[in-house]
Image (cartoon, helix red, strand yellow):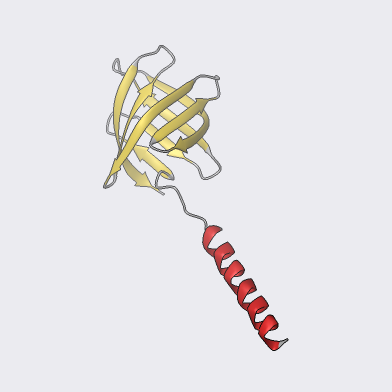
Length: 117
């Protein structure tokens, strides 16, 4: 009977350890505010929302907000207007590279610097 109790305890410990390892929270490297020197800025919030102010090629600043999610290396912005921006993204050092599509279907390549967490 003592061996059965040891096996049961060992099984419970293994299950508990597996649960602890798989339930650990891993923060996204995108959290925080990213900006460039033209006035474009995107803030990624941990609850899955974002705010953005994007300066287009004519120098006009447009404000956006909505939700964001990641699937593999694709970043999906769902704007509060209902439109979406699906873009590949890359972080190299403290720089975020992505393409932004505005409400007029114009694409702009952005290089943003991580300015705050």
